[in-house]
Image 1: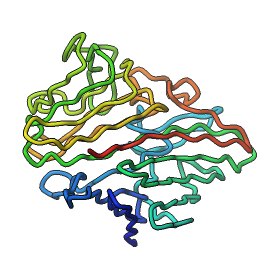
Image 2: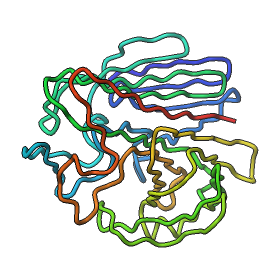
Image 3: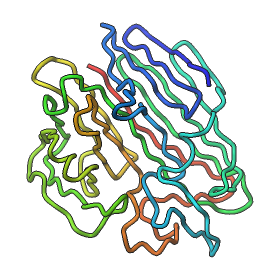
Length: 283
């Protein structure tokens, strides 16, 4: 496992080749914006989720009648990636290693580019196999909130109805609970994560959200035009909040297991490629 640093005049970012994971993001004042992984709560920073985000019913799926086992969040975050290309302000990681649950020939690239005060993130998947496969992606950045999450709020691009899809274990149900109606501002509350664990929003209109606090002027805007599902997660008492744009949601408790029926999955034919992007803007 190696550490890779890229920088420009505004930002310094550090990544691990294990998982192609963002480990640190410091602004021009040296302030750390990414959770530093206290093992008392959670040691992660920003896992890359592939070929599925969240859990599958029975930790498996079927494709064209064949059953494949797949752990929650897929396998890419536990793999060592290659550094395919690096410049002073960008790095591209490459993963090609098959997994028993994904025994296909593919290339997955995670490209990070610093552009002024932005981190531009692109995930690109290429099907090198002779058959179709289905995949999805999810981002899982944990943003530092050292004052505690209740000192922070999320401001969405549009007014939203924050209808959280209730979980049974790691799967979603068809029941929802309202955590706010007709508002752009979502106040982070420890009690919500004590009650519900993760917050799962399937039907938000916004494709961008800003994390901010009245205690200081620092902000982080997450723009996710290629992702339809948004999750929020923290361990109660920890100094971070994960803002997670996912292409797919966790399986429903009554999912039939056929990956082609799962909302948010992308079917990729041989020779095809697909890219998904999101952007982190640091203020």
